[in-house]
Length: 224
Image (cartoon, one colour):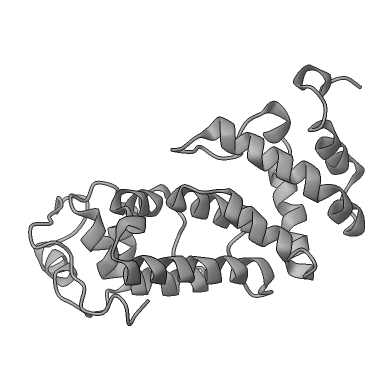
């Protein structure tokens, strides 16, 4: 990421309100290549969702954002998701697009299997699905890693986080995309994947029952 996005700057005409973002001197730093931003300035920059030229801005801060994602210091908030989506990074030149995709793939595996990963897997999944406008590839990767203890433990925790939404046919996060389709995809994936993992890792009977109910018609899920 550092090599691919070296020399990038915010758009020359980019601006933002000094009263709620920062000073003219700080804006000038975004238009200066390869100058590290302090943590506060970086955070204020990706928190906002109202930049006029999101593509150049994201390319300017991506190396530091990537470092923060790995360390857990970058906060997975709406502004950052919005910046990725509005930048349309999947339409960037091939080398840039491929660098972002390779990083996201590696970061996802890190979240799932690294015992020191600090970001909850269900939060990372929401972030990745939203910024890539795809859900299934991330689920496929997770399923392939469930033989790993950390990935399985995080899966059980995620299912526990989703157990009040999926039985009600609700996606467990507010999406800017096709919530109904993604909810169906996630529910079916959990229904197919979860039972043996939950049994093997000592999930509660209540959680296992929530998953079992996903196989029932909607009106029958609340009986008994």
